[in-house]
Image (tube, protein in one colour):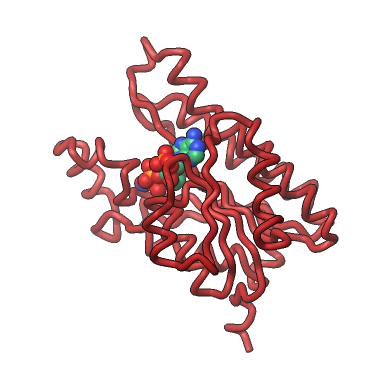
Length: 251
Ligand code: NAP
């Protein structure tokens, strides 16, 4: 039955940035599809835990701006759920400042969370997949700025363009182990990440006018793509960044 291929029954996922926005939506969808989720966040994922229940969702508090937390994130997931099958690198930050005066701090903080930790957490989880001899699924959260330049967000654009690049690199190296590495590029979604943009009336109206679907996206819009890329249904999909953008990129 084709729908069985989308089931995540018995699977264990690590989802970073699980307390709000897209990470909360992905965690919810994974549990509904049958998985257990270890959700990583700086602030507690209390709401997500209440929504999904303690049997299905385990919150790991960690600051992903440093790679030092990676052994703890993987170790706690294994202690709680015994294995790991799926990693969603969703946690991310954005800093807005004119490029002419963009600070080193705004550069480093974004690159550390959005790129450096993503790479080394992915490496650690892939090492675990090899130890389990199980294969596995990696899903990176990219952006429209994996394709476009953006305005006043140079470190974010650098990180998200690089995410699309390493998604292909890692897929090239690891497809032979049964590890699928893919990414999702969300369009303009209603979350904390875009609050400043949505409050800027002119930018907000410009953005909306360009979205063929005629509306901003919501976390629920991402759930189908996330379950697909986490499931057996995508076993022959490698190194691809799937836009979920209401048609933005095609315009
Ligand atoms: P959000 O509502 O701002 O959520 C970001 C999440 O990342 C939060 O759970 C946050 O936890 C976590 N996070 C940030 N820094 C962290 C750190 N140092 N350590 C641990 N967790 C950290 O944003 P979102 O829109 O859901 O974004 C999720 C992903 O989608 C990001 O990678 C973002 O770049 C990407 N994206 C979003 C959009 C959009 O339109 N919203 C579009 C394209 C791509 P804390 O609250 O504890 O910091």
